[in-house]
Length: 253
Image (cartoon, rainbow, N blue to C red; front, side, top):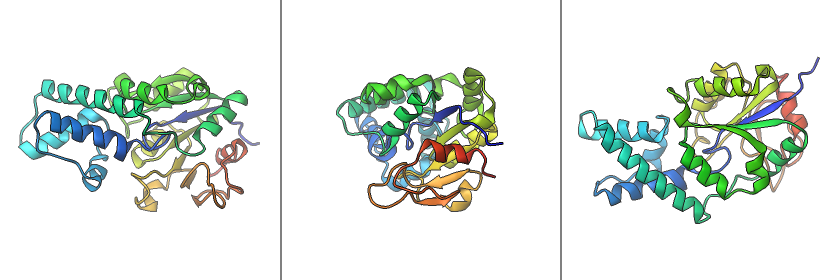
């Protein structure tokens, strides 16, 4: 018997919007410049740093490596708070739009009565800044937001997704996670949740083996030219990911 889809859980950075390189990275660099620090993260460096989940953790790991000692937590907190303020301003300037197909799919899921929530390692202020610029139909569709502030252990640890399951009170096999990264996939898998990986600018060059646990791996939720490119999983005919195709993923091995 086919499994009915009950809920969608959305990652934010790279999944809802391409925020990493032209959002968070830019904000980190402007924060460093304002603090008189000599470091600037190019796309290659930042891509490697994404292996560390969370802004505070990323700053801590970088300072530890560059300065050879454990950084003062107060210094890290000051840098992170300033970075988040800069990121919020970047978002308000309108430079970070939702990825193609996100608004449509969120609205279709809401109209179909599916429950939806956000599960991210980003701080709540960064999430709220992004959603403030999103259409209200999208913002209202998310019944809850679990952010990096809400957990002790961030992705790839499954703690955030386990909290989401507590909020939903649904069988894990009826809930589909949408992620873009190997850390997100590992977190979803650790909570026994099926996961669709929609590759982002930050993860498109990752090896296919990194996403072997995903029910499907695609480039985008919507293609303006041609059909959806499926790297792993059942064929998705047409130019858009549909709810019926997402439901098929629940029965995929």
